[in-house]
Amino acid sequence: QVQLVESGGGSVQAGGSLRLSCAASESRYAMGWFRQAPGKEREGVANIYIRTGNKYYADSVKGRFTISQDNAKNTVYLQMNSLKPEDTAMYYCAAASSNPYPWFNARAYNYWGQGTQVTVSS
Image (tube, rainbow, N blue to C red; front, side, top):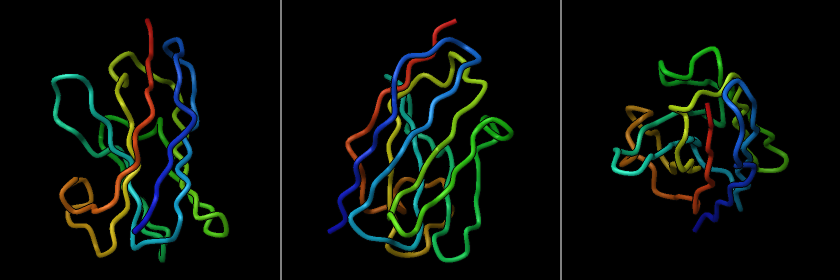
């Protein structure tokens, strides 16, 4: 049983920045950030493999978002810069106890946080 708690969401103007945090009760194989807008499918935003530090990003956020980890705190971060209105969604932190493949497949993650809302206005 892994408990995940997200924080850092909020409302910002287009072009602004937010930093999301995901505090985990214990480390897993990989951690990922997903987002879901009303009426839309949940999509993978970024992923990090805890052991290697390898990172993956959705094409829509490459160059703007950065995922990072603090293993001592069992915490994963998502730095979001140059935010766009289309980034508006509920953002979820997820953990995978085994290798998630492909990384952006939500079904490959077995632990989920409650979500934190990100709203970007134009």
